Image (cartoon, rainbow, N blue to C red; front, side, top):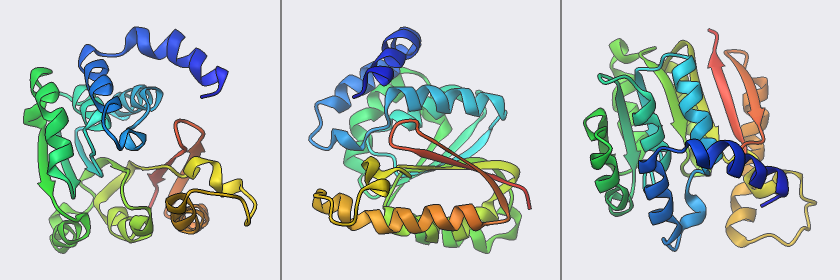
Length: 222
């Protein structure tokens, strides 16, 4: 972690972090796949964003232990809803007691399994088109463009889709022959393809931010 990020965490993030989020962050840090978690500064950013756009009906693809899910649930109003999808219920249940203790579990509709079949079912219902205020995607990078094709129908005009890991451990600017971990090398081309496609998509306004591992916000304009 660079010194600027450490400064932001110690000065602005950790002192204001919700107790439940701190507890879940510490639980997740002990998990062997903890690299998959949403960083604390990104969690703080999501909370601010959700409140600024007055989000109420949301979706999250890729949950892991639920740090970003908890951030969303805390930010939403009491009657807010999150459709949350992940292929691994066990990881979600690791964080679920913390989410329940925070009193926000009732906002979450968790579905175990691949997201694409669920999205295809939702897209079939024209009444669901344009009904989501915010959608956050932090899942299988090789399906991001497949998700985008469906999510652009489901997010409302003026609503936001957030794609996580769009800098992909900095590999997007690494030389072709750079020594990269196998999984980073495998997904890098998918992330590069996504970034080009989002930049060319005239249905959205975009903003790519160097928060965490890179977050690209897409505001639907048509």
